[in-house]
Image (cartoon, rainbow, N blue to C red; front, side):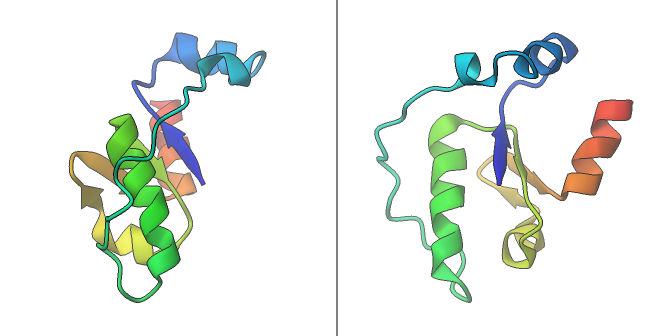
Length: 87
């Protein structure tokens, strides 16, 4: 599972060399997210995306993909994200 925020070509190019330099620690204030009932362990990823203000949540998880959007975050598959990178 990967969170991408504010994607730009420059960010992508530099992340392959130093991915840790783009990480940030978040306090975990959104632990009450309960959007997915079928697999409640998926809610932690929605909470992280919400707290980070992520533009995209890239996943192969079918429960998450069914949502498509969560509070401004686009939930897309790896194939969809790869397509975005080629545009």
